[in-house]
Length: 337
Image (cartoon, rainbow, N blue to C red; front, side):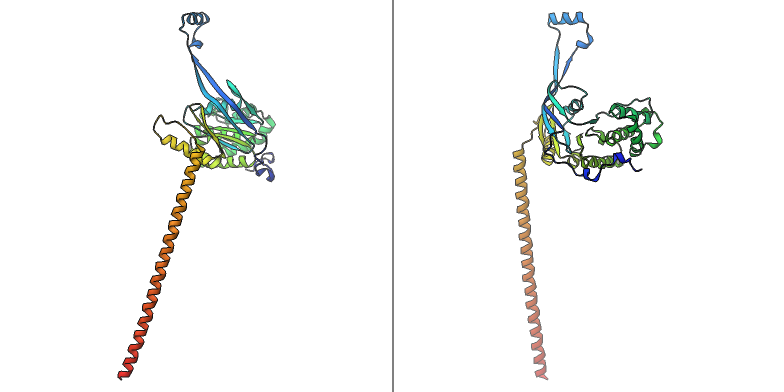
């Protein structure tokens, strides 16, 4: 189906804008704390008693500590890290769902966040009703959603299920609907938390293609994924978190991904680290080794050609000598007659 004209960007917008513009999103030393304790399950009297007797304890758990990064319009930031690194918590703060304990987040654009599969949907409502509900939660008018709905339902491939309750859909179908709504309403900042990992291979390829279109259209995207191949293919910047600590924020996507994969292969307890100088040194060494091997191959090829030329010359010499011998024999045979 052809999308509504309001959803198709003009040709000029397919060229990403310069990255020197004012950052569309900036995190300044963001820290997020959870307080863990039994204070939620006790009354005021018990709270006073425990405080007086020293039996009241609260533990501070820092999900993220001093995270800082800036991204510009048209950037695609990939956030990597093991489970419990603080990725989803950070995205909730970026989306405005929660406020950071310390630091601040500056947003300059309309945000569409797809953080958890099925979040923002009502299981008892139909697929169509949920599409309108989700659009309203993102701040879009009913008229806009009415114009966009057919494109959303076609992209998600759920035309035959639009009148079914949302709770009857499989996890892959829910993911397709959620991604379709989040990506087709033309957000300025799109946040995706592992959503591209859900669904079949065909839809994953289709959604990746859509992501590239969104980037070309100038939208800023944040993607959390455990698929390093996906990060390498789609992102131009990487934020690496480990146990709430920022290990790296860089535009060296390949270097960060290589370091992260090496960290995953390392023994348990190995410190997560990203050393640009070490990566540069390894690349220089790899380049030098590749050049050495290429030079060695060139030398071997030249030696092979030299030997081939010598062999060809020797073969030609033997051929000529054989021809002379044949000529001499012919002369001698003629004299004998």
